[in-house]
Image (cartoon, rainbow, N blue to C red; front, side, top):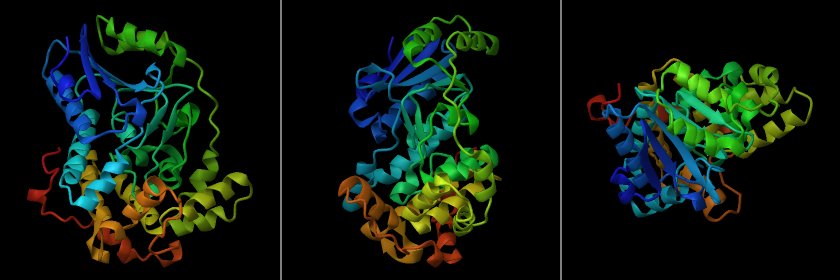
Length: 371
């Protein structure tokens, strides 16, 4: 049996199989990037199943170009962001409010929520998987929080879940926008188990056939499909040492003292991204470490308003670093963003602080009802 929402949004397929609610993101040509209708369909399914005693667990996967699996979710629809800003479309505000509310719902879901994080898992894809009770990766997993590439920050709860990673690994992932595989995802505690990619369809069907979804039953199920993960490759000790600095400029200075190609590559990434948004991102994660998820998501909602409407710097629409980053990397693809300021040395604390001032009083905040 299927929910009616599947008809309303064909890019989110929902089906009940036994006691399992099954979700398939079905926008393979866009690597299942999330649109506002998809976010609404996901929320509707999860809310309905939360109240349905016949549903004991939920599983989510992505559709690849050749069938189920092979891709999970590449994030939010960045082209939509750009177009919505230019035409003054209020749907952009709805997108972030509803996406962050969905992220919160998943993190606090009362039933087992199991994410098959095969293939590309980036940005918004992390937002709909990091709250899962079981986060499954495969040797094909390509995980990233790439927002600083486009002059944004790691949202969808990134300031909270990246702050939980060991040894400042979350700061490294957020600031560099680097892609990691299954082994490093496990080492960073952003995944729980690695499955054999060739057996994902079998695992999905077996999960749907489960009679019980208690911890011992799920443990027995997952052990049938576990596979060795690729080796972790990150220099975690170096990351812990260099990314403990109080500012991104301090991180850069620490990396300049490190020998080897890894440090040089990391420095190049940090010198390529928006200096302003790098310092904003670091401040976000440092604040997020001592916040509840609800409060951190409210902070992100404030921040994203400032990204597209940087009033404290008198920058609007195309004049913001976020819009410039999207233009350079996604629209024109010249990969020559003109950041303002152009270098880390010119970012002031006042520039950063303005992103953390809420545009709304607490009683009127779009996410005031998150608890």
